[in-house]
Image (cartoon, rainbow, N blue to C red; front, side, top):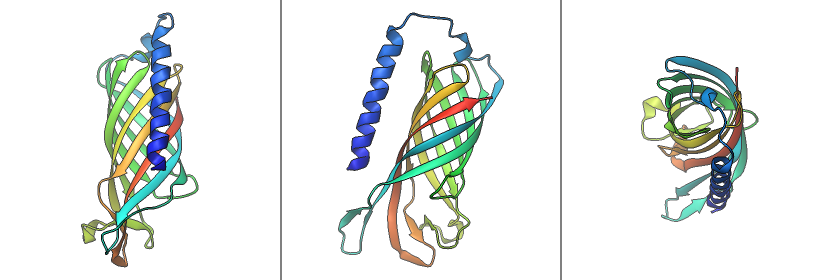
Length: 195
């Protein structure tokens, strides 16, 4: 419930920013649409709210209390055309859920300064006590996550990122496959810097 409230607020703020960005005088924005077949590298910091929803053995739904998460990551982006790009990120938790995540995304510049993207992230967990997907006992170290988001390019180097992520598989403890905590859902806002 709280995560939906935060998502609504972040979506509203981005909508207002988009409307005000389009009202400003048009300037040279050629740096926002790099030449095709070029590379960008950078660093990104994300912080947000995460919660999980699951059903217990009595078929009652439960929602874990949302908690704060922070991640630090690096990215490499390959610009296919002036409006589309492929991006790879490696990130890790700053103070909770320290497992690294490897992400692959496709982005499309739908307006000056704005890029919508979608992709998949793979949480890679080496901790034997951690939560991981329950469906495949041989692949418990990897949990796929769906990623959808939008980026706003504030300057040539600085950008802001609003992202929604959700696990594709339920998470469970390796020692007790019946103890599922459901799928994690995360809404995060971050900032990044292109080198």
